[in-house]
Amino acid sequence: MMLVTRILYAKNINKGKLKALNEQAQILGKLRSQIWQEYGVLKCLDTSDRKIRDLWVKEKREFKVLANAWKETLRDSFNNIKLYLEAAKNSIKKDIFKHYKTKEEQKEAFIQLKKDEWLKDHFLHRKMRKAFKHGKNSVFNQIIVRSDDYKVFELNNQCWISIPSLIKNKRIKIPLNTTMEYKPSGTLRLIIKNKVVEVHSSYEKTDNRACGNEIIGIDKGYSEVFVTSTNEFLGKDLGKILTQYSDKLKVKYQRRNKLLALMKKAQKNNQLEKANRILKNNLGKIKQNKENHKVKQRLKTLIYNACHQVVDKAKVVACEDLKENFLKNTSYGKNTNRRLNSWVKGLIADALKNVIACRGSALHLVNPAYTSQCDSFCNNLLLGRRKGNTFYLFNGGTIQADYNAARNILARYFDKDIKRNTPFNAVKEILLKRTDSYRLTTVQARL
Image 1 (tube, rainbow, N blue to C red):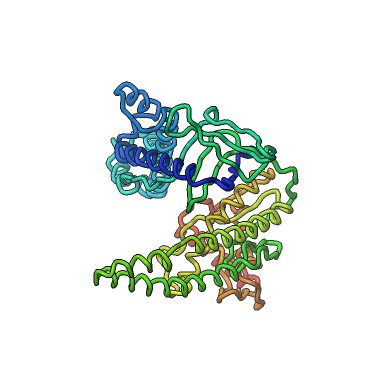
Image 2 (image 1 turned 90 degrees about the horizontal axis):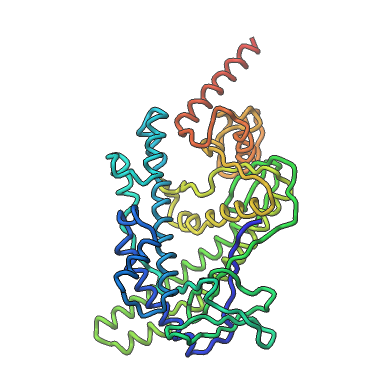
């Protein structure tokens, strides 16, 4: 059982209600900006949203929205700041292991980081100053509604919600594209995008499908979602969809940039009517956003199906860290870089994590260093070589390179010497020692 988000949409909402929601979201967006400006850095360390709320009530600050609306916005914004802080802490963990040599020093550093006492340590302070820079708000289209601050009712076999407006005792009634069977519950998040109102609510999801009994290693791919250690290729259309859509967007944006240049030229020549016509009729994003949404949903379906196919057989799934940024110091040319940047590796990681948690399987992340360069049919040693999608084995045969990597990832799950956070230099040293020992043993056996 896990908590997931359900997105509902307002159906046939009139312009008056949409205008009222937009106005409220804009006011709350300015409040978010104020919170980020005031508490978006060091000032958030020794306070909480409750303390800020009590302080503002004591100061009798005036807001142009009702009390519950600004209090929920304050709580949501402050939680976002805290998440940003935790992400910054997570990003410097490797630096702590590199800088502090003994386990006692490392433990003390992590305690200071957890208790927000890193200002006392010069090294931690310097690293956090780089990672935790002053954030700013860019959200002006959201409204948070508390669970006891809205009503759900049925009208004409359709689910409706009634939420507070800017005026006390006056409510906005919104029709939803669902029935009472799937009515929203808990705290609501209303998001207004391109004149469409999304209603986000959470619910507990259960999946009665059991997981398998095997331990399987998987390698993420571009042409397919996963290649398993059992030689299965799952989600084969992934690369085809990404490449076609990326190439299509390239041509579209090249033409769009020409129109943008014409608009800027018209503005420069004081031809404002011409510039406004180009902006209104040729540089809109409504159709493009709809097409982007369709492609994303198609990719999401493909990826989740592949994840379920893995969990159908696996009790434990071993994989490398799918969110590792492997492109940061590498360039493969303009077209290849563009296609790889469209790769949805973050969505793959989240989908795998969610499906495994929902179905009761286990996810084990392993160290990815040299998993593509080892020979999985020769004790996972640095023998053989990879060329493109083919791996040339030490014994003279050839196999698919991603299948070889998946077998190495499975072997890395059982490896007691190579841990997940072992530096790649240490991994290379371990593998070279094993390879040299194997070669020496082989030579001695022949003699």
